[in-house]
Amino acid sequence: MKMNAKSIGLFILLFAVGGIISLAGAHALGWTGKTVVIENTQSPVPTALANFPSSSAAVPSDFVVAAEASVEAVVHVKITAERAQNYYNPFNDLFFGRPSTPQKQEIQGSGSGVILSSDGFIVTNNHVINGAKEITVVTANNNEYEAVLIGTDPTTDIALLKIDAEDLKTIVVANSDAVRLGQWVLAVGNPFNLTSTVTAGIISAKGRDINIIDEQSAIESFIQTDAAVNPGNSGGALVNTGGELVGINTAISSRSGSFEGYSFAVPANLVMKVVGDLKEFGRVQRAFMGINYNELNASLSEELKLTINSGVYVANVLEGGAADEAGIKKGDVIINVDGKQVRTGADLTEAIGSHRPGEQLNVLVNRNGINQQYSMVLKNRLGTTEMLTKEEEIIRSYGAKLSELTINEKRKLGLRYGVKVDEVLGGRFQKAGIPKGFIIVKLNNVYVDDIAKFERLIQQFNPGDGALIQGFETNGKANYYAFEW
Image 1 (cartoon, helix red, strand yellow):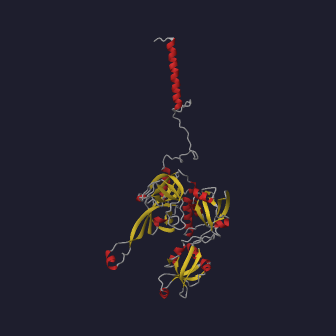
Image 2 (image 1 turned 60 degrees about the horizontal axis):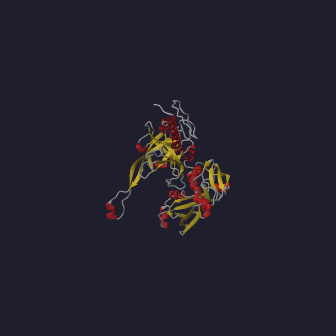
Image 3 (image 1 turned 120 degrees about the vertical axis):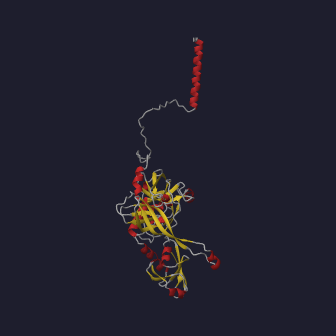
């Protein structure tokens, strides 16, 4: 087709106007004039994650290595225990006007455990074996052993068992302080009696205090994960992608009793400190700073006119305690203990609970907006740096020898309860003026049935708590003594 000059000019004009309209539309949609070329190539593009080594450990393609490295070191813990059961007997209520007598019933329970040494030391949760008459351990290859309970620590919910075995498969223990949010982990255990079960998840949080351990001086600084944990997993292993132990699975957050999204593990560093104490002393050597504190937040920081809103605020310093002797004062904010950042009370209790009395720590505090470091030597509950057995600590904590009341002594005084002070050895009893021969009937308004009951009660005291002892003098006169623990 032939086109004259006028037609060609009109065509060019229309083409130019169309191009301008198209360009304007492209700019409206965000085009910048730059050209992006996508190459279709078979060569792999190197990638790396910020702050992570460029290795398969950061984002594993599978968990075979970790599972195989840990599953044989996780055991099935079975227990036999007695529990009191109330059986309803209508004849008791109808004819005798009294409730039915509780009957003891034998029950079975189970959980998990982790082999720490080839000769048979196994760590589990205290609540797994609590009240057990018999403890049986079944290894991954189905060998069964009777276990001996070496010791327990209810404040961390950790227990140590021993079986008579050799050449057991053990687990490598990692530094739990080094775990990071988002890191992959595996939970290995025996949920619902399904032996050698492995589930995967990530670390969701650290230093979680969920208020689940009902003990004085409890240490709760859990590692939180979303790896599935269910009844029977308690006492099992939480491991990293290298199959190394980072925690002992202990609890779940659940309304139904089964896994609903989050589980909690005691950090491995704290576990190994407790295990070491139980092996060496038969009990945990607890260390104390000698302070009362509040967890700092934005509102408390504003109220106290502080320059920071994260850390642990020192509300009171006990005279003669570790913090007092180190130079830490009321109003300081603890932000770091021996290189471990302290944001919450759980962080602080874990940091202190991982050490023994007599150990020296560097404590960084913020005082009036300025960071200052102090060297602190930790003390035990009695205010010394000694390592004490349970019996030594109990006796020295009040400073007396006690004896049970005879039937004649109870009849003479008209008592059903009480223990007698045979000898005053110093300590709190001497300072309070409690004499030899005094009959202790109540401690803080709780009846004292025997020496064991008295010792259980005093173990609940913390430094600075008030104590009220009520009873009778040798002449039968009622009296009481009050003092600070």
